[in-house]
Image 1 (spheres, rainbow, N blue to C red):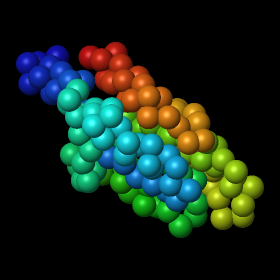
Image 2 (image 1 turned 120 degrees about the vertical axis):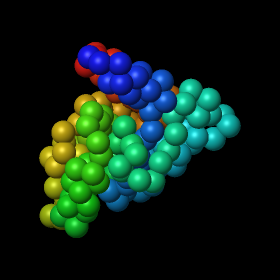
Image 3 (image 1 turned 180 degrees about the vertical axis):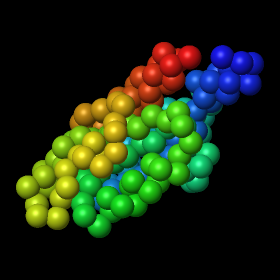
Image 4 (image 1 turned 90 degrees about the vertical axis):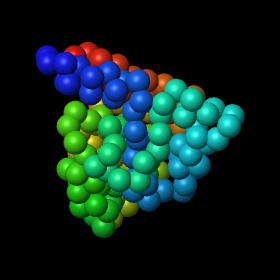
Length: 145
């Protein structure tokens, strides 16, 4: 691995930029995901920054049930992210479709549309578990180097 690649790899691990996308849920997991940015948890002190552009993101946080209307948007956002990238499915809905899994418009969990690296269970998932999921995703980046 050359010096520039090593620098980029270290930067991803030390300061991951995350993109959050809600496929459509009760907003419980969204509130908990955004809670990690509040002063109570303050993940920005560790270099974790929430970005709005998928072209700048290293980690993709996905909440909610994937349905037929948003699966194309989810795949499009994933495709715009530069490799290497990590995908984290958050909450029961993101893992399996949750209580909505038997609805006719529901595709299922996030892994039915894009590959998922880390699963964070819960309904809603706790902020501590979400932070732990991001740390596990960063361990994947470290293992690839």
